Every structure is written in C-alpha cells, then in structure tokens.
Amino acid sequence: MTKLDKFTEELKNTFGQRLKSVFVYGSKANADISCIDGNADLIIIVENLSGEDIKNISKPAKKWMGGFFDKNKNTEPVFMGEKEWFNSADTYAMEYADIKENHKILYGENLICNIEIKREDLRLRCETETKNLLMKFRSHYLLYADNPQYLKQSITPVVKTINAIFKTVLRLKNIEVSNSAHENLNKISELYTCDRAFYEKILCFKEKYCAMTRKEIIEMSDKTIEQLDKLLEYINNL
Image 1 (cartoon, rainbow, N blue to C red):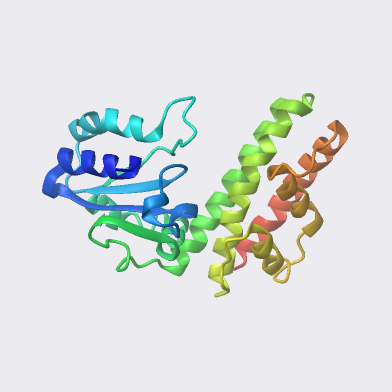
Image 2: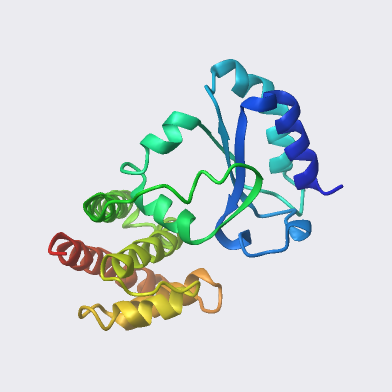
C-alpha cells in the first residue's frame, strides 16, 4: 500500500460518505497512481467541512506531508467544503483553469468537469495576481536593496508565479498552454514585446543551471520591476 493509498483510507475513515472527491493536480496529475508518493498536490472536497473535521484529519495530513528528512515530502493538501468548491471558481479562476486542464480523480466524484470559468473572472484574477506580485517584489527590493543575497531569494518565487500568469494570458488569447515554462515564454513573446532574455535568465536561475553575481542580482531586480509593470499593462488591456 502506497503512502497515497494510506492517506486516502484515512480520509475515508474520517469523513465516510461526506468525502466527495479526492484529486491530484499539477505536475503529478499525469503520473501513474501507483507512482504518486511524493511531491503531489491534493485537493479534498468534503460535504459540510467543519473545524472539528480539520482537527480530526490533522495527524494523517501531516504524516502525508512528511517530516523534515522525508525524501518523499508532499505539499499541504487543500481541504474545501463542497459548496465552497463550486462557489470559488470566480475567486480562484487561474487555479481552477489549471486544475481543469491537468488533474486526476483519485477517489469519489468528478467535481471538476462541470466547473465554469468566466473569461472576465480569469482576466481579473490574472491582473490581481500580477499586481500582487509586482507590489510584493517592490517591497522586497525596498527591504533588501543593500543585501543582494537576500534579494536573490526573492527572484525564484517570481518565476513560478510568472509561469502561472503566462499560462493564463495564453488561455485568455485561446492559445494552447504547454507544461514547459520555456515553451509558454516562446508563445508569450509573440504576443507582446517582453524582454525574453530576462525571462530566460530567471528561468535558468530557478532551475539552477546558472548563477548570478551581486551586480547581476541588482540588475535583474530592476528588470523584474520593469517587466512586471509592462506585463500588468498588457493584461489590463486584454
């Protein structure tokens, strides 16, 4: 019995018939179920989810996530009530669009196929996410402009969010989304005049294929603000 099987059994024992659906999304959604034992993103939908439910499933959930030295660690599973799940397609339009395209039902009902994502909700969520990213990075730059080592740590999270934003822009333009961040960048660069070399550099940095000098970190930080501002303007006009 795999780690996933054990956690699913704990979910069924805890929630019984109120457990509506368990599904994996993200990078492991296309993997064989028997191979999903680490680095998996799960969503668990429960009818009338309560605080007591969260307390009761806390220990199994933490065991599923793994300890500090666990090689097969998983991200924190997302628990949602059934009504909450259906009512959140506007608030989490970007995330739902990703899930609809890339998921695997592990247990229970398919509560994804009938989710409707409206274009304006998707555009607004994309704009909000881009604005938040820009504001957050400005704040980091304000605090760590004189400390490139700390500033460097702020660049990596930008890449992950940028790819999610790029995928959303492609969906808004009815262009097929790729699992490769580099391919999505290629498609985005055909839509507006972004600094492709900048995005390639931070992708390379995130994937740990290249390093940055102190001078480059400052230069890339300047570019990050410039390019996020430009991207935000493009999204505003979609």
